[in-house]
Amino acid sequence: MAAEKLKKGAKAPAAATAVATDAPAKPAKAPRPPAKPRKKKEKIPPRLVVRWGVFDGMMKQVAVFDYRDRAAADTKVAELVAKKGTVHFLQVVKEPMPEPPPAAEETPLPPATPAAASVAVVAKSRPAAGRKASAKK
Image (spheres, rainbow, N blue to C red):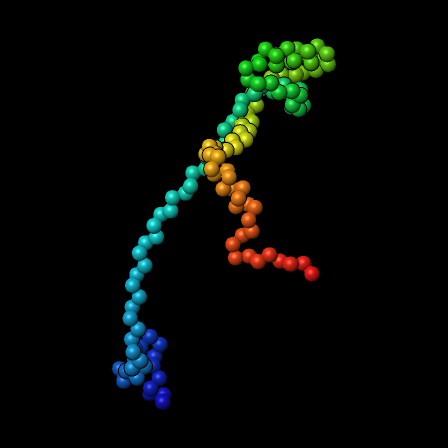
């Protein structure tokens, strides 16, 4: 037995490995194709509305005006400076544009003909076919 021991790194005899390799060989797996690059969906930035903001010295927003109302915003700043005696200034403020309400789509009904109206009235007055009138006890 001592003679059968192998030195570290030595190969095993062919007879010993033949017994171990009698098992059927598994077919080699096909290599996977490389992964396709995925396209990221681009995020659409929200639409913004530009307005004039009136701020005090503590950066607190005091009032907001539409962009076209710059004159009104300037007068508001002048009023606040004269009234309170503190620092007030204008700054552009960008806010997300509000979503418009969805328009209610009404499908116009076809013009009613007198014959079609009378058929509908008769159909409503008769019991449905196949139903028996239930008698109350």
